[in-house]
Amino acid sequence: MTPLARLIAARIRLSGPMRLDEYMRLCLLHPEHGYYATRDPFGAAGDFTTAPEISQIFGEMVGLALAQAWLDQGRPAPFTLAEIGPGRGTLMADILRAIRVVPGMAEAARVVLVEASPHLRRVQRGRLGEIAHLDDVSQLPQAPLFLVANEFFDALPIRQFQRGAQGWAERVVALDQDGGLEMGLAPAPEGDAGLPPAAEGAIRETCPEAAPIVAQVAGRIAAHGGCAILIDYGGWDGQGDTFQALRRHRPEDVLANPGEADLTAHVDFAPLALAARAAGARVSRMARQGDWLLRLGIAQRAERLAAAGDAGAMAALHRLTAPDEMGHLFKVLAFWARHAPVPAGFEPLDDDADDA
Ligand code: SAH
Image 1: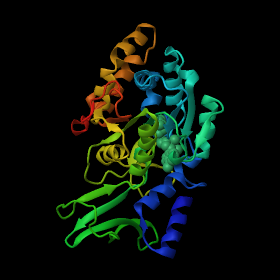
Image 2: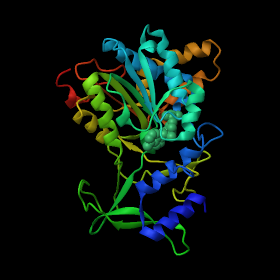
Image 3: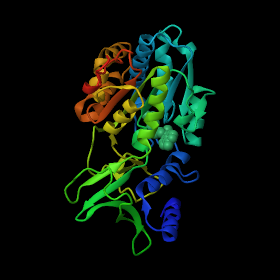
C-alpha cells in the first residue's frame, strides 16, 4: 500500500466510505503525498505527455489566438494574461514568446498562474522567472482577462453515480475484507436530483468544481472584456465511467496506487458552456483540437519549422492534429466578451448568436 492508501483506509475506517471527489482530491493534491504536490509528472520520463510538452508549436497557436482576440477587443492595457494549471510553465513560456510579434501586448500583460501545487509553482518560477501565483480563480484581478487552461479541468475531482433498480447510487471508495481499497455503492445523498433518466447500470459523472471556476472566469470577462480558451479531452455531455489512472504512460486501476498515479476524468463541455453563458460571456461551439489548430494554420507553421531544421515539427503536427492521435479526443471551447468578435478558429454556439 502507498502511504496515502494507508491514510485513506484509516479515514474510511473512521468515517465510512469516501466519495470519489474526496478520494481524487487527496490523491492529486494532498500536501505531503499528493501526486501533483510531490512531483513533476510530465514528459517521457514521467507519467504522461501534454500538448505543450510535445512542441512549442502548440503554445504558439494558443498565443496567436489570444493575441488576435486582444487586438479585436481594442488592445486593453493593462490586462491579465492567465493560465490555470500551468504544469511546467511550458505553455505560458511559448505564449509569451508568440505574442511578442504583437506590438505592446507583452508590455500590457500582467501574467498570473493559478496553481495549487507548491512543487509545480517552483518549477514554473524556474521556467518563467518571478511570476504571480494565485490559489484559485476567485483571486483573479478585476481587469480584462485573457486566459488558457490545458488539461486542467480533467484533473478536477469528479463524483460518479450509478443507476440501480431503485434509482441513483453514488460510487464510493470502501474497504474490502483485508482492509484494502475497493469500489462500493452508497445511497446518493441528493437522490435523483439533477441526474437525467437512464437505464439501469448507467453511470454519470459530475465535476462539482468545474462550473464555479468557469463562472468566475466568465464573470471577469463579461465585466471587463477578454477571452478564455479551454482545451481538454472529453466531449459535450458524456456518459459512462471515464475515471482513469495513468502511471508511467500506462493505464492502471484508479485505486491501485493513490498519490502515485495521475487521476483524471473526461471533461464534459456542455455544463462549462452553460456556466460561461450564465455568467454573461458568449460561448463557442466545442471544436476538435485538430480542426481548431489546422484552422489557425498549424500545418503551415510546422512546415516552416521543418524547413528551418526542426526535425520534430512534422511529427508534432501529426500528434496534435491527427484523428487517431490527439486531434479528435481533445476538444477546445472558447468564451469571450459579448459584442467582441468570435475568437480565431471558433464558431459561436448556434443558439448564442443573438447579438453577434
Ligand atoms: N497545463 C499543463 C499541466 C496539466 S496537469 C500542461 O498542459 O502540460 C494539471 C495542472 O493543474 C497541474 O499544474 C496541477 O498542479 C494543476 N492543478 C490540479 N488541480 C488544481 C487545482 N484544484 N487548482 C489549481 N491547480 C490545479
